[in-house]
Amino acid sequence: MAESGSLSKSDFLQVAEKIGEIRLRFAMAQRDGKNSLIFLDGEFGDVLDQREDRTWAYDSLSLFERTVSGSSFKQFIEDGSIPLNGQSVPLPEIRDSISWTRYPSHFDRSLDRLAWPTTEYALSDSRQVPPRSGLLIGRDAPSFQSYDAAVAAFLELDLLPGHQFNRNDVFLRCQNGLGRITKVVWSTTTIDVTLEGCALMDSVIELASPMPGETRKLSDATSQMCSFNVPATGLPSCSWLVLRRDGDWLDYKYLNWPHAPMPDVGVEIVVEGQDKILSLISQGEGPSIEFKEGVPAEPNNERYGVCKTIAAFANGLGGTILLGVADDGSIKGVPDPLKTRNSIDAITNWIKNIVSPLPDFDVQAEEVLYSDELGLIVRSNVIVISVGPGSLPPYGIKPGKPEYFVRRGATTFPAAPEQLRNIVQKSLPAQSGLF
Image: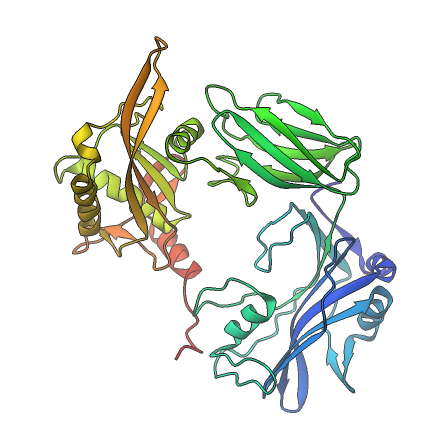
């Protein structure tokens, strides 16, 4: 099966009629005595959670969660409206050709991350204008300062304060319980994979990359585990895990760059200290990992280079800088005096003086034991600078005359004007509804 395609409206109605139950979540605005649908999200499939119906009612807006049968939903589409407490909510015009796209488990689609692989049907792209300002004081519902905050709470989304909920169309999503990659534990020596599903028999889990990878054939158990060995040189770029059967994928997880700047949701690097450092080194430099052979002792270009990368990480998805590791991944270490608390504080202070606004970051010293080319055990210190994704971009250096940076691949570049606009727009708060 392809990852995307389309089907006719009549074929989709046949699909809908066969659905057991659909959980609908939608918002309705009341304007001039008329009802208007703002958005509608539906979920169905063999792993649908059972939930009670809900209603949050406000003066000009109501949020609903209802579970209906597939045949009822088909009738809604044919009638062009949803009956509701003696009223009706008009549906926007449904496309004659309905597009669908398949996504792996826990994929981020602006709504909640569904736990199983999902096929999403886009029924309409009609743009209804939702309310954007004014307090929402509930009758028998919680109160909120804005429409966006209310929708986020109703849908149980992690929406940052002041940000907008940007979906206002009609979607239906089907979760498939045939098989999924539930958890991946990635250490320096092994990758342990947990799988679940009702149809794992004769399926294969593959550790794929540009070179042919290992595979493990699965049994008929509904929950299984298997392991892959990590090469001594680390995982190659473009590595990913794919659960497949009969020439089709059931689920997949990207592990490293360039497929993903950071491992996918469900991929857990559960190593600390030394193993964490070695694991990061094994991934190589990329969008979220940078190596620096030494620690800049003076406020020179090298120190500014570290801060440029910190700013670039904060403008993106975050990342880690390892001081004491060469570009080729060889561990050079830093002198013992630099691992003291005073030295760590000094590094923290010059970062604070150069990077603005200040992102979330942490500086730690870690001791690493490893074998050199002669097989001898070597003990070295590495400085780890961990940078979180920033909530107040853009981030730059030289507060008096700021310069901004972004990360592309394993390199830090000055941010072009259009890149700065994109960075800012992604984090813009709603201009109304804030008090």
